Length: 154
Image (cartoon, rainbow, N blue to C red; front, side, top):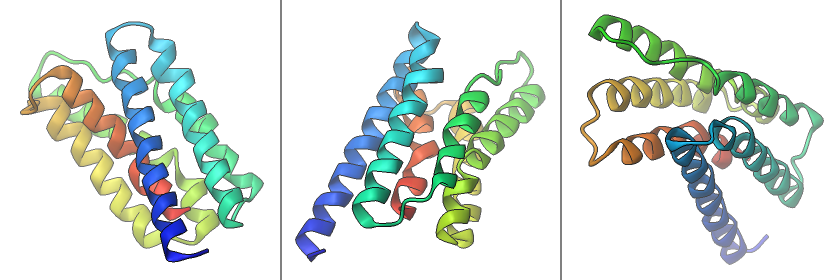
C-alpha cells in the first residue's frame, strides 16, 4: 500500500472509532441495545474489514465481539466513591480484555498493556469524577477509549 492509502485507512479507522463512540454514548441515553449490540457489531465489522484490507484477517479476531457483548452489560453504577472506583475499574478491565484476541492475533502485547491502562483509567477517572463537559462527553470518551488502540493494531 502507498503511504497515502495508509493515511486514508487510518482516517477511516478514526471514523469507525467515532461511530462506536456515538453508539456507546447514545446507548447511555436510551436504547441500551445501541451500546450493547450495535456498537460491538460495528466494531468487529471494522476490525474484519480493515484486517481483510491489510491482509491480516484471522478468525480469532471474531472472539472480541462476543466478549464485548458481555462486557458492555456489566453494571458500573454505585453510590459511594469506593464502590464507584471498584465498579468502574472492573468495567474498564473487562472492556479492555474484550479485545485480547486482536492483540494476540497481531502479537501486540506491549500495546495490549497500554490498552488496559488507557481503558481502565478512562473508565475510572471520567466515569467517577467526570470533569468532561457533560455525561455525553464522558460516555463518548469512554467508548472511544475501548476501541481506539485495537483499531490501530490491525
